[in-house]
Image (cartoon, rainbow over all chains, first blue to last red):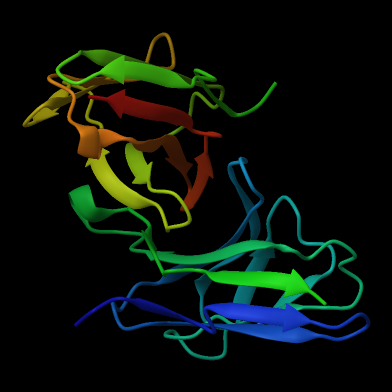
Length: 116
Length: 108
């Protein structure tokens, strides 16, 4: 089945530790996105990538890093510089061309990150 | 001012009611418009795209007014299963901005 896979579903971070969240898609989408959602809040864009080996900061990039070495993969690292990392992290992908399907974002099931 | 603003809600309605959600956006160059549904502790899922001429999918009707930079979603004959948070989404140059969502609770 085509879709977006995020792992792990739950993740715990110790103080001072970097952790990496995985996001893989087999939809052949060009663009991929990372969002953070805090309880009762909307989605805030962390980073996005429209092409391999290129990515752009979103609204809340500080304390996070990404890479896009393959079209299918867009991992997010939450660094120790992110002092309040507890949140629901969502990865999405979309086509950038193609009529009515353009810009529709499809989401993975998310990763819940907590601090120990 | 936020780029995308939605009715704050929450909306609590009885089964069978008609409910309307509104959304305004600030970027006049926006190209694509969507409504997503998000259930508690789940990922958002596309409910419907919004086209300039307006579009309907069963009990759901979406409207777009580019002149007023306004999007709406109408749900007729509400079901218990419609209880969720509804997110307005506006896209431009491959990047999407999500509204904070409006929570709907449909009660028996």
